[in-house]
Image (cartoon, rainbow, N blue to C red; front, side):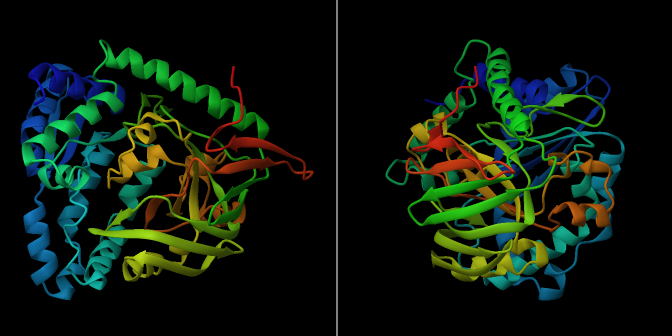
Length: 413
């Protein structure tokens, strides 16, 4: 059923008040495809009504992106104009909130040479490094939501008509983000409270490492000393509470960049750089990926791993129970925001400094000594399943179950 105006307004209000938690007199930046213009206009209207001093939209267009990736000279792909960096930095320095509407076409760049895509991604990562520090250190409030697009909906529901696919995907999004409830904002507060209990329990435990066992996975992940588990809502450096991801079902923390050993196998496709990487396995030795294979997208996986030194190491470990609403939908969304919240996952690349005590104020040398991974990329991939067991290992070597058969083995009450 096509979404009603009331549903769209509730979704916009949730993104504004629970997502970025826009403050009166603050600017809002929206990153969105032109295909989502109707919803963007509703968000802008509700933002101004909430007291925004300005709403600036940074539009993108998948057709134009494809044309550029296919036809532009390599020197163009390898260069990001300074004005683009200046634009985002001007808003970051002004303390604007940033809302990204993430709904990529999973097959957009499947016939483009992955080396061209990798070059453009690397250039973007290098150019936007300072801006990413604002995001990863929570200097600003930011949030990511998704809105159905035709190509994405047809990928999720390939046997449905275009209209049916769009309507079914809207229904799933509204259910998973709690828009179908009478008061979504109150429902999210209750959900965040549950995630706070999980992260408080894990923060008190301070496990030395996590051990993962599942078909195709036998992995040991050392955690940094004084690590911090986050999940659900968090606070900006100015003390404003916000939800970075909507939906979210995870609690996550920081692995030691040199402390990962063993093999892990993916359980859901990874949509990276307009291409799908499917059924892949990574083998780690002292933190670094030393071997890999993929049934599909292996060349794209190699380019991701070769982005920089940190791309072959982990920056995040996240726990998500198999009984999460997204998992129970039994859908593959081909959208990391959704699929990562259906499954335990890991992230290749840069770590969030906020996941270690004092991390946001550490120098580069201090981060390295603490085992904080640095990279231009941060790519989540899903490796959880109903067959996964996870143990927490203490400093003295004793262990206790955290997950059994894909779900929590812990009572947080």
